[in-house]
Amino acid sequence: MVHQDSNLKVAVICNCYNGSPYIRAAIESVLSQTYKNFEFLLIDNCSTDATKNIFESYQDKRLKYYKTKSHIKLGDARNYALQFVNADYIAFIDADDIWIEDKLSKQI
Image (cartoon, rainbow, N blue to C red):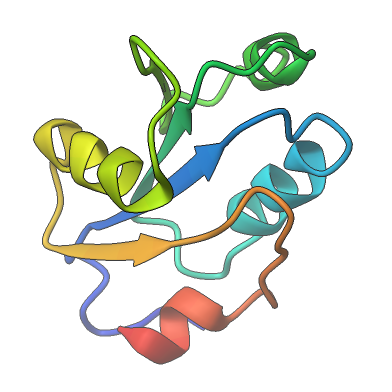
């Protein structure tokens, strides 16, 4: 379904701390959205696992990686992400969540 407001861009913010067992499923669920006008910002909250390697295995220009300087609280990590947002709306996904394919379309 192509939505009439497909020109509206959504920033999907994902805070991740050692989420390598789950992050691939979260990313795939966002990439599979029927609504395609989004950017995905991964905020790596000083992970010590393979999170960065998994993220870098994707070649989609909508995916953007940012790492915090130190481990911070979830709310602070989300606020940190706001400086990088270039979109009309913001959505949050946790590293261990998955979305149904029309979630963004329904919300727009």
